[in-house]
Image 1 (cartoon, helix red, strand yellow):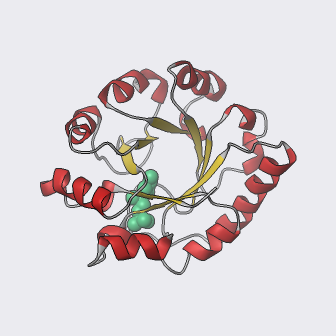
Image 2 (cartoon, helix red, strand yellow; image 1 turned 180 degrees about the horizontal axis):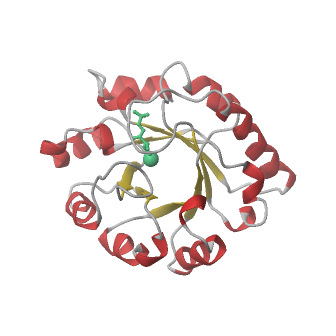
Length: 215
Ligand code: DX5
Ligand code: ZN
């Protein structure tokens, strides 16, 4: 599998969001990473389905929707209707993770589960074969521009081992938080297939160059 780059629009200029999305598509992004935060599961509030629906009109790139919200099972339908092509929920955000994962699968789109830095990889073992993607958070979710947590590399290796031992060839391993030119080689070496990056891409002068550097 070649490395996919998913720019996080959390670091985009919201006053010209449509333009930012078009620019990032032109620059060679593979997915658009969309951080939905509810001010409850994480200490920050971003946007919801109406904004996703609005930017759906300006690009054909897959929308990778990262739900950092309590009880995602209550609103998954609205994100799919708004244009999500894949949905990632946090293991810590829903009591019935197995049920919520299967709910998304029944809607016919790929499903991912995200783990906060303090959540062990072993917690995924009973359901990992049901997943299309595992997201290892490499910062505490909530904000762009934070420092990469080094222990994340161990967790990535653990996911990679599980993937191998269970022969989950289609499973994608994603990382999110503090990914830049210095940390990208570390996570790729440890098995990451999809790199999310906010500041490293939108903070750069040349979007295309910054995407190529990460890749
Ligand atoms: C963090 C979000 C990330 C964030 C990454 O809670 O899930 O997607 O935007 O931003 P950077 O790459 O700047 O750490
Ligand atoms: Zn994210």
